[in-house]
Image 1 (tube, rainbow, N blue to C red):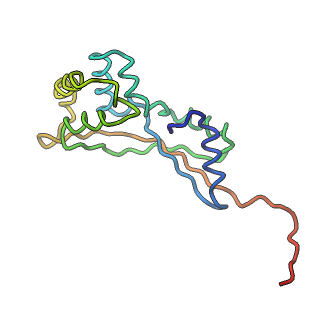
Image 2 (tube, rainbow, N blue to C red):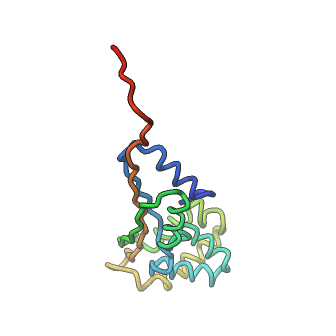
Image 3 (tube, rainbow, N blue to C red):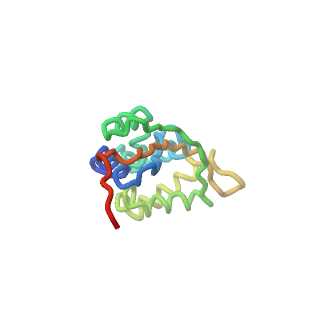
Length: 165
């Protein structure tokens, strides 16, 4: 969730739901639980320093179920649940993965120059080799954490007044 102030963002999401409406918010689990992205983050640390690796880790910062439950409680979503889901992420090649991350403006986009991306691509071919399937494609587990909640019925506002039509 790329919101500066997360509890108010969750509150607003719930506010705009109709009574009985359901909320689902998915976030990336911790980077260390995704073996391919963990290897990529370590490579960024090694090649360019921890600040670049941390820029890549930005989407993974909410990857802690207890932290999400605490955010939900702070937002007033006492009945929210947080569950982990596993799916594979697939790219047609290591080049495609690096190109995707290069285009991502909230992680690596604008952080590395052309020469650095060329070096990253070259080094990724070794670092990410364990995740190559079928000769060229790359695939690995990328778990997510999903917050779910349901908005209860509208609050009671007192007796209804009959209106003559």
